[in-house]
Length: 485
Image (tube, rainbow, N blue to C red; front, side, top):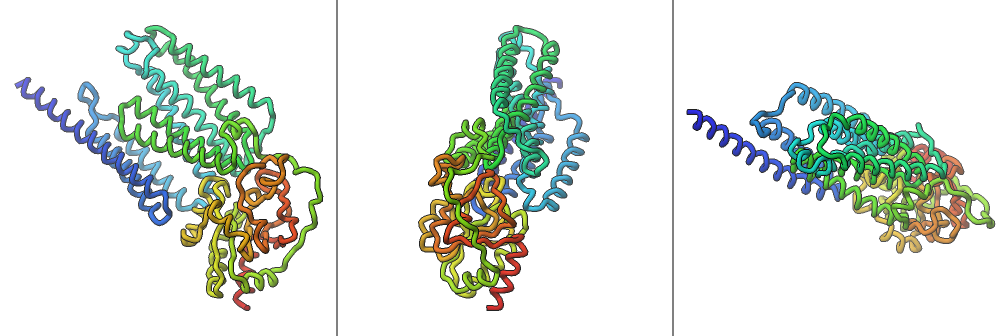
């Protein structure tokens, strides 16, 4: 009878494990499918749904079918379901109420919470290191390495993302002290020293090393703060993408730790996607990742001494006439468009111009806004057809044949200094070559500099006219004028 019971338990464990592994495979497929669908606005919403469904499937099957070596299931189900409920409700409320201008901050905040979760997993699991591994190899084994990497990377991702959130929300200022990069190097060497010290211990109780682990945790948190603090200006999209990759890698460490294929693959996908996006962002600025991290790109000086020129303004009425009686118009959106929440009015103007036979396109720079894809998301919210969004390399050859380029809240991504001023901090960065168009209209609230804090000589060019005022109010006035013509 005991043998029958034991066999039954073995079969139940085996079948449950098979279902669990199958669910992880299905979840992995859904992750990949969802990520693939995110590459196009028309399918992005479905992609989010399928990826979320894959994660829900993995969570449910883990709760139902997971068994440890002793045949025990998951405990503390009340806490688990309570946390799921609180997180789901909070996420729903935040997603419904968040403004598009605050989307970069939200991304940084959510990314930071993922890093914190990964770091806490490492803190929780270090005392539970497999004794058999310690008896054979001491602390020098894969499980310890995974825990330490998860702790360090997750901690850096958490505090770094929180600092990025503060910078994006104008709550934290950049600290452009050159000595910080040396402090960061010293801290990184100290962290590596802690890794070596911990892993070189022989068979020792993990509890005895917890004070060292907490010290490593503290230093990692500090490093995350100081790592992001000097970086600012136009480099913030790169930082957000890099930190997102860190969180994915930290989550993958948790997948290794728990032998959880869904968690492992999800982390790998997020980490690799973040790295690829970071490389693309760096390529868009013609800079290396190392230069972004230690170069403190934002807040550069003024361009070389030369005749700047004079500002020439245009009235709303004249701008409406110029736009209405032309053939080709290209709109360059920037963060100012998001701040003014003017994307819907902008699309209204586009529809009016198209009714008059004007061809209108949007020129999208990869690092426009405060996060990768910010302008694409902003314009998608206003239901601008994706076909109208043209990337940098494709739009530039068309600009010399374009009658009017309208720049709404963009600055650094159209600055000619990137091409003709070797002393400029953005020299070499590919830009939207708005200055090659026949006419340029720049919508700005004033003559303030862009996020990189350098002068834009485009505003003084002979073919440029400035249209000052809040973007939303100005566009509303333009729409009214165009209707009257």
